[in-house]
Amino acid sequence: MKAIVVTDQAEGTAGMKLVERREPQAAINDVVVQVHASGFTWDELTWPSTWTDRLGRDRTPVIPGQELAGVVTALGYGTRGLSVGQRVFGLTDSYRGGTLAEYVAVEARNLAPLPGDVDFTVGASVAMPGLTAWQGLFEHGRLQAGQSVLVHGAAGAVGSMVTQLARKFGAYVIGTGRAAHRQTAIDFGAQEFVDLENDAMEDVGGVDLVFDVFGGDIAKRSAGLIRAGGTLVTIAGPTEARPADGLAVDFVVVSDRAQLSEIIQRVRDGRLRTNIGNVSTLDDAVAAFNPTERIKAKRIKGKTIIRVRP
Ligand SMILES: NC(=O)c1ccc[n+]([C@@H]2O[C@H](COP(=O)([O-])OP(=O)(O)OC[C@H]3O[C@@H](n4cnc5c(N)ncnc54)[C@H](OP(=O)(O)O)[C@@H]3O)[C@@H](O)[C@H]2O)c1
Image (cartoon, rainbow, N blue to C red; front, side, top):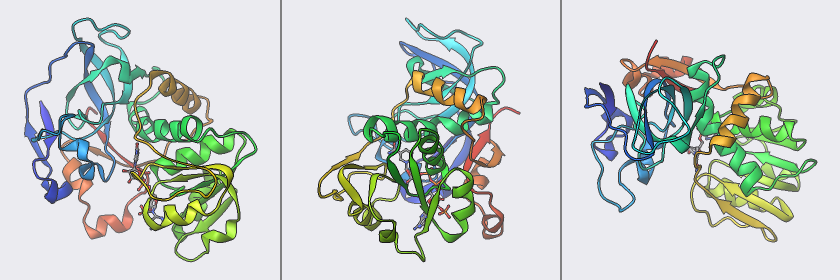
């Protein structure tokens, strides 16, 4: 099968190569999926789990990519709940990845059925951002209707899902980003917008929840805005930022079949809009992840999706 591999972390996406690899086998409770569409988070090659297994052992050469939509072609020993020929979508274990390829082996529990009227590209695009937004807002942030949420990177892949889910849930949403992101964030449902390059974030006053995607100084300054009993949720890794009288939670998304099904139902009935940027083929994927300056200038923002099968 065709697959994209990386062997050297220092090279980043420039080290990606399209090669021939053996098709994966289904282990216990796995399915093999023929990948139709695959997603990749732009800084995935900086994540430790891309390069090692759970025991810290080098797992190169690695096939990156955790987001997928496709069709089940084989079941592993003992696998229940999915069948051959079924359309599915979801997220692989972060120590496994492998979706930038024609076939991938995935634990069945990490996938949900993809309804027949939802395109594979759409399925692949909402798995990671949708689950991350859902878990950050409702599990870790324990959002309640009527609360206020500061959503960093509100025009980005995760931030646009956070903005929509929070707003539809009845929260007051303040989005942040660059000046050029204002209209996009408002279109996704933000009621206010802070241009982090020109506005003073502190002017927004107190909020109940901060959904942070940046970490560092922005996370620290955001912690100071959180009201008593509120929460800072970050997906940018462990943080020293702490609200004076509240919680700080950093987490890594895990796949969840029930949540995937909730998310795709919202996409189907129009409550959740996708945020898809460039769509590329597997043959052109390396170039898509390494855009020239000319292409960068014209780049459509949002999630880059690799359409593995036409
Ligand atoms: N822990 C987890 O489970 C988890 C899950 C998913 C993602 N993540 C992480 O979350 C981060 C965001 O992921 P994503 O897929 O949403 O990325 P994304 O689509 O690039 O979204 C980030 C948004 O923030 C904007 N931005 C970046 N730097 C900024 C700055 N200094 N000031 C203002 N706006 C800025 C970006 O604009 P530009 O495009 O113009 O830079 C973009 O609109 C990544 O680091 C990713 O690895 C973690």
